[in-house]
Image (cartoon, rainbow, N blue to C red; front, side, top):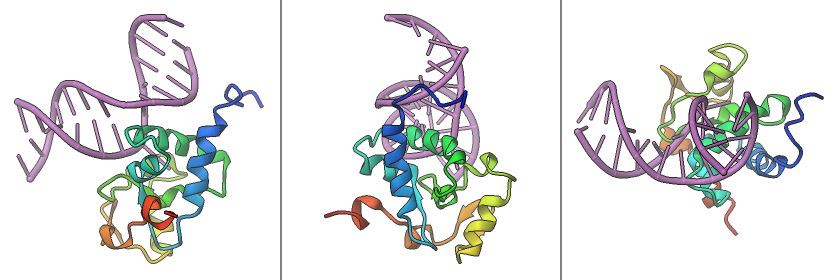
Length: 116
DNA sequence: CTAATGACAAACT
DNA sequence: CAGTTTGCCATTA
């Protein structure tokens, strides 16, 4: 299409999508954790950027990705401002005021879960 | 190439 | 403790 975004950027985004797809149901992770796993720890913003483009990648459960304190900062980018929370609650994750409850308990760190 | 932006994060005031 | 500033790095204009 017209918005095929240049040509090669996929490389970076694909890695982000791959990790996000591996997030188990009922678990969440943070942008920074994913960035860290991809060896770009200081570029957590890039992960969020990839999520923004993930709208065409329906396999990417972007709702399981929140910021470092478990806040659903990306909810505004979903279909509605409540889609993200509803999907999380559908997986058994309690969300109050856009904040994931027991965040540290359901936090899924790829650097740890996917380590060799 | 320069400047601006962004679904973050850590440091600072 | 809440709000502001800076760093980070890829993408876009």
